Image 1: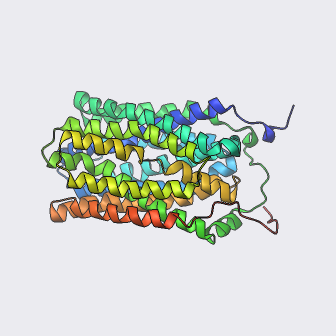
Image 2: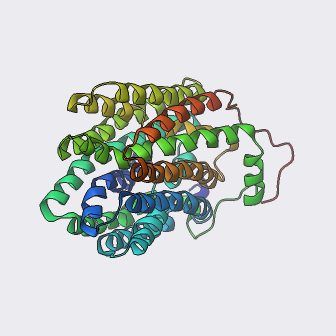
Image 3: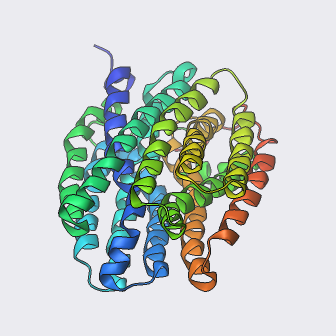
Length: 406
């Protein structure tokens, strides 16, 4: 019998359990824009109030993601995922029952943000990085993201239906019960090398791994590019439903639009992950960011109709989370997988700072100007910037001349 640390989980099990967890965690989160108008109207809050809570959520998601990644690297993903499921349920309960803007920000912002940090890509991709052969790693990341994205596509109509059928509060309570399913699914990602609560032997300390990454120019460029990803997708995901209603389109158009984003994200993430095994990942990332800017510009230029919305949603869906597999695969390729969840957490923190600014500025500038136009233009300019900064990234593994004590 080989030692525990040398055994690996079956590929199908890793992908199935990882996809199911991402489906629940990201699927519920992907639909939060559907609650903007029902909650603000019921509570008599401004859009900035809701947007600020979502911005806090994204910032907390990124911040706690670093420490969730450290914990997953040290103790394995199981405990982190179970803790995240409990936090998620508590946050949805608080989101439904909050009667003040402060309590709403604490529950929907900090609690759910911390829960997402423990139940999404940095944790799941850490398992993939450790359990899947490097020759198939980028593909596996794309496949897990694609399967999870299909779940997001399924979840959007469910959330829209629940809001219409039982009201926004009851729908949040029902989702709070549903998200607890993450806990039993997490046992399928219990890695043999972490049984007993101890991580496998490492050649680096956490401090040295952090220092090494932040001194690496490619890590800095990837981090800057991922900031833009967060700004764009969260602004669109949270504010596009209200943008469409402001222009006279019926509510179902927004629900279908977000569902299309989730559906085409399935293909986009899988294609990006698969291409990452054959092409330079930095070029894939540059193309994605530039294509986003072009898609947004054409969307603003074209007459706004249900058809133009659905076409934009399909295109932006192809580009939605397709940055995630190549970005994480580059991090694993450069630095290895010993501290991958933590380093992925740092990159994702940059993503979430961008998310904070995208969702908050969307609400703030709308309340100040009565329009989302300025934020759309910022998103276009940032996409061009991200395309340029990803091109110089060097993907070759780092050479460590002197072994560092763990």
